Image (cartoon, rainbow, N blue to C red):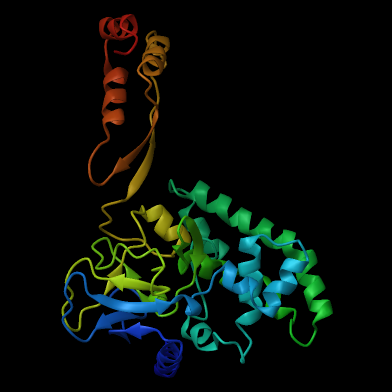
Length: 326
């Protein structure tokens, strides 16, 4: 982010009523983040964003473009968000222009990385999920073509071909997957939301902010409070959730070298010998599985139980079956 776009964002944020005790700076893990200029204690509010500055399907549906898209009866909430983003982003007169220009020109995640980069993961456990997700978004874009082309024809001065191009769609979908927050906008109603300024907060497994996903019904704003102290000049981190590296790479485009929530899928096999049928029967009787996850924080009990069955001798297997797994 350039100094100019950072200044523009802060001026816009002030105009929108966003209250912040943080400033934009270079980040330890990304090209920008938010740090505090003063010592803050646990419980202190470091950022307050009014609901009027938050972008979600409901807010979009209240715009002229949103109403026009909904009138087609051809858009679900996700498609509404994506098309609105593609069209609003290049609009120099958009209310959110300062927010758009504060974002990276390229958003590379597992969903949108070049094919040659994605293929580098072909031998890893996360590749099937990655490939399926990339196929899904390509199919989504293809399904949107009739509506997108009708918009280009109906509004040629406003919606250009490049406005709704594959590259524009990739940017929009990467934005909503990597920057959006799940927010309880009203009691019991959770929506994907873009929260300007808060979008600059980077993820950490030891984040300062962990509980933030609701709009305060009294102040009609999102308040970001610290769950642990933060010293002056220190970057403030927010938790994106207890996510394994496969999810961080797919949806956010990065992985953590020491991720306490990382998992590796493990599929066990039963030896093809005279005890194979008994082992499979014992696994079923004990309600166990051959598919597990290896976690950095220890082995799950189900995995240990399954390993015991796979290594048991015939007498032990017969005892298990006799007691039906008890």
